[in-house]
Length: 344
Image (cartoon, rainbow, N blue to C red; front, side):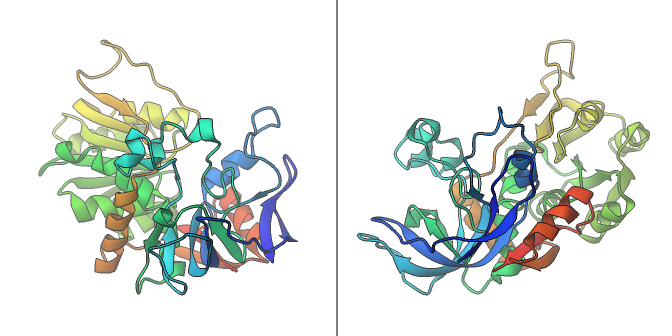
C-alpha cells in the first residue's frame, strides 16, 4: 500500500510503498478515507536528531478517519463497514485518568510505550491503518470524513481548551484567539457555539483575519502591541476573561499577558517555544496559565455533534496521497486556508 512517511531527519516526507498491515488480537484495521495535516507534524520533523524520539520511518497522520475493514481476534463492539473517526491521544485504558476517558493524560503511556498514530506509531496517511483498540473509534455516522477528519485534533484540541475556561466565559466577557489558522478558526466557532463571550481574533495575516470574521469573530486585529488598547477597551479596561494562544511563540504569549484580566485564563495551545514568568507580582491576581493537551475521548463525541448541528466546520484544502508532500510545503509557507486533508 502507499503511505506518506518521514524517513530521514531533516528531509521532506516521502510517498512510499509499504506492506499492508494485518490486525493482531484486539486490533482493528481501517481503510483510510481521510487524514489531516497538522503543524505538530512539521514540529516533529523540524527536530534535530538528538531531540527526535518518534522512530523512523514514521507514517504520518494523527488525524484519521476510515471504514472498518478487518477485525483482529477477539474484537467486539464494532462492525466491518462502519465509518469512524480515530481518537488519537490513546492511553492504557486502565489507569485513573483513562478510566475517566482522559486518555490524553494517561499516567502510563510513556512507561508502556504507547504513542498516538502519526506521533510515534503508524498514522493515517496511508491506504490502511491499524487501531490498537476499538474504544478509540468514534462513529462518524453521516458526517463527511474529508470535511470532518480534522475535528479529531483541530476541533478536539480547542474544544478541550475552551471547556476548561467555561466558568469565566459568561455574558459580557471577552475571549481572545491568537492565531486564526487551522485550529484557531475552529476555536472561534466553538467559542461562538458554546459561550456567550465576545470573540476577538488576532493574527499577522490579513487573509486569516478575514477568515476569522467569516467564521464568527466579532472583532479582528493584527497580532501586535497595537491590538492591546482596542482589545482592553472592549472590556472597559478590565482585561479579557481568556486568551487562547494557538501559536505559543514568545511574542504571542507576551501579547496575551498584556490583555488578560484579574482571575483570567491564559491558555497556551500552540507548540511554540514561548515561556512566561509566573509569580505574585508577575501577573494579574489569580490569573492562570494553562497548557492543555489534545482532549478527552468523550469530548470528541461532543465536537462531532457540534458539526452535525452545523455549528462548527473546518475550512479544508484536499490533496491526494501522492500530492501530500505539497500540503506540507503549503503548511510551511503559511498559504493554507484552514486545514489540509489527505485522501488516499
